[in-house]
Length: 407
Image 1 (cartoon, rainbow, N blue to C red):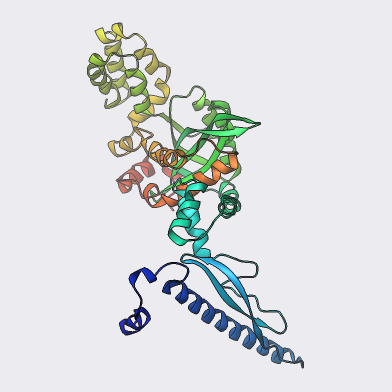
Image 2: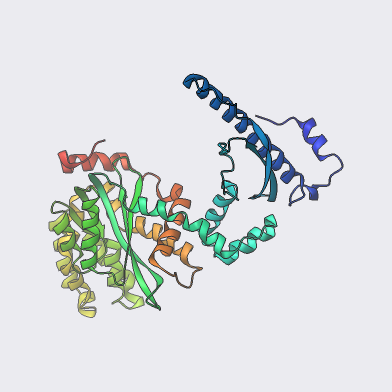
């Protein structure tokens, strides 16, 4: 619906562009007029509905009717606006637009939550709101608005999950959180799943002082309790004991160590001038046509000059060999997807960007609140479908047969 230009010209007559915003601007006047008109319509509907109910029930009592109005100051995007809220004689009218005890338009709260989700601190939001809208919003008010999200966060953390996920990437990031009067660097465990339709979903967030296989076992147990019965492929970093924790919870899951993590770990042992040569030699292992060819390539590396110069590299591959070779059973489309944990690392970078401005969080809940909001704010980016998913899906359906969820 378009607004008549002549009407806009009449509204702006005698006003300068600077008169548009602010508490005395035309936008505030329009907000007041439209809100009061909507409230008046709500009252008409309320009184009509009461009359219909009374007639249907055969009640014979004085009709409820309007009884003047009371003023309420509410905060809107354009500043504070004083509204005349209509009243009825029976006191049964509870408006939807501005409910009883409500002092802010919902859109105002959403703007504060949006700024918070993008990493702005409560002090920064306070300054921004005051500068743009001329409204004082105390840090405690901002905290109260964002704290209202916690119920939603709790429901999200405990929501039922799908019975089967084709691929799940698991990783952890570090966040400073105050606990028992001291700030500690806690691990936030993140599980990012690829759904049967190729889109992605974060299954949850878990907090622990240290990243370790023992706590990952608790995470996996939580996934089972929330309905997950099977994971086809779990892509993880090289954390010791992690594969055993996954096998205990999901015995059929094929565990894939992130090849990029292995390469980075190997490069830590090599001098800068030899890194290209080491990378080229190792590439022959993970691009081999099958596990036998990869074994030959690793043996060839072990017999070469680079292995003698950097003796720690080959054993690091041998130690995780059982989690490397599943990768070699997959066709190129699947290999490209599980070759690295980049999917979850890209997600973690968005989380880090949101928490970067915080020195530390007062609690796990405060950190979970911000991370949840940051995930929602960037969901269109990280939730989008995996590239080449149609080809990957077809391959997984062949490889895992009746275990692959086709729906």
